[in-house]
Amino acid sequence: MTEPNPPDTMLDRLRERLTPEEFPTDDRGRIRMVVDSLVLHLHPSKVPVTTIKWSYTWGLGGLSAVLMTILALTGIILLNNYTPSVPQAYLDILEIRSNVWFGELIRNLHHWSANLLIIVAVLHLIRVFLTGAYRPPRELNWLLGVAMLVLILGANFTGYLLPWDQLAFWAITVGTSIITYVPLVGESIGRLVLGGPEVGANTLLNFYSLHIALIPLGIFGLMSYHFWRVRKDGGLTLPKPVDPAPDPLTWQKPERVTTIPHLVRRELIYTLGWFAALLLFAMVVPAPLEGIANPDISPNPAKAPWYFMGLQELLLHFHPLVGAIIMPGLAITGLFLLPFFDVTSASVGIYFRSRRGRSLSLLALGLATLLTPAWVLLDEFVLDWVGWLPGWDSLISNGLIPLALIALGLFLLDGWAVKTFGADTEERVLFLAVFLFTAFVILTMIGIFFRGPGMALYLPWNMPAAVH
Amino acid sequence: MSENLSPEQKVSRRDFLKVAWGFFGGLALLETGGMVLAYLQPRLAEGEFGSLITIGLVDDFPPNSVTHLTNGRFYLVRLADGGFLALYHRCTHLGCTVPYDQTQGKFICPCHSSEFDQQGAVQNPPAPRPLDLFPITIENGEIKVDTGSPIQRAAFDPSQVVYP
Ligand code: HEM
Ligand code: FES
Image (cartoon, rainbow over all chains, first blue to last red; front, side, top):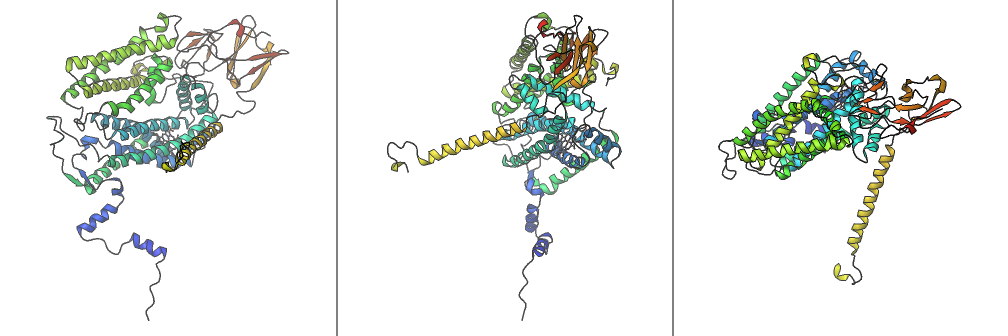
């Protein structure tokens, strides 16, 4: 008499799943196996050979995801040695630096990855912009990207306070004071964010909660959606040669290669390469930390985090409502609306749209590089709206009037591009966008390298030391 | 369904339920939002910055003096004529702490170089308004300052000065 087969226990079934009796030997079976694997949850099984060239995407989106992963892992492990209270937070960072095994390395990794992420995410946005990849049907994914960029800046800004040193305290004081200039609701929103009238223990707790829970949750949620949309939208845009611009109807689709190994191999190399570089950098360059926060003494200069130096520069020239709220508000709105008024599909996949687009971009780059510092110097030493228009509200004299002048200047530039170069809609958008973005980068550089004590202008090699 | 409706029944059951769900759902969302907002309101601790602080006797502060009371985050200014002002030490531009420059007799902000005179009035922008004031009460020669409610002002006015 044969025993009936004993029923499978859960353990048996688990073992079966983990170690299949035999691995498939035929191509079909192998491919199935591959399709089942984790990699292909994310990627299609075949990708166009042209889109995986470095020189198209530069791997910037993938690198952003890698950095987010490093940030999550190093961030979680930092939590084990960090208390979000005053003054313990600062003492904990000191401990992490000097008394925790590999503490300094982990903190440096977290710090530098966070800063690199901002650069990489912005470069990713630029790549998508320059190749026209935001156009239909990819509008939604562009919007998701802009939202993620805002969240990344939020993560960085909230993280900036956590070490509770002088740098943190005053950057956040100045940064959050901007909110109070929002008409009507500014004061109460400011109080809510700070958890009181000034940056203090409640602010630290608020920022901590945002930094470790709400914002990362948001970013990882949007990231998943972003990746899924890439596939829903039919994969990446296909790179196209600029000369002669191919006809979208007759143009030959490129050959497709299997994701494994062609794409995955590149991703692995890229990830490992960047991780090695970051690790080396974090071993050599320590994240900054100054004395413990002291509400009675502002350091001189009290600078914003570097990625907000462009904004800080605007603040030095305009009434805060214009410089810190209206102008950035317009920029974000413009980014959000971009895929709805610039919709030509013919040039998608061509860097800078066309030959003329390339020349115009170069022109915009050069113009902005010359005009921005000129305007900063002019405003610093010659223009004095408040003095020239005594009795006027500085919101008008030092805000709306110069804003109108700048708008007029952009209008003239645009007209020039049309008249002299015969630019079409997409080339005009490109021209103005390159101009504005370059101007913002220049402002950021001026803020980082040329502003010293009292926020006066200095040459970088003559910069007096900061007073803390 | 609609053919069963009598002419007076303008709203079908389905439409009614839709509206009702929408209404109460929206209400619940608003309530939840309100709860979260209320929950997040800042709390203040007694006796700290933000409450009524007793700082001493009138005679402790000679005329024409500026004293930094860091616990209360303000300067007690005694003007030459004996009157008092309590100036919040926070710059009205973007919130830096403004130090008093004894030699120049004015407040100069280290952050974007706004300047304020002894009464707190703006001498040099970008600060958009004078330093905020805290209300002062003087009873039996004892000075009390309410740090809970800074007063914003458009300009200095002699009525802001408190005399013993
Ligand atoms: C799950 C995600 C994250 C966790 C759990 C986390 C956790 C932490 C903790 C505990 C600190 C304090 C320790 C320190 O100051 O080094 C910190 C600091 C910081 N975090 Fe994060 N973080 C996360 C993601 C991010 C992201 C996405 C960014 C920015 C893109 C970011 C930017 C920063 C910055 C700039 C600091 C200040 C570092 C310093 O100068 O010391 N973090 N984070
Ligand atoms: S914060 Fe004082 S001048 Fe800007």
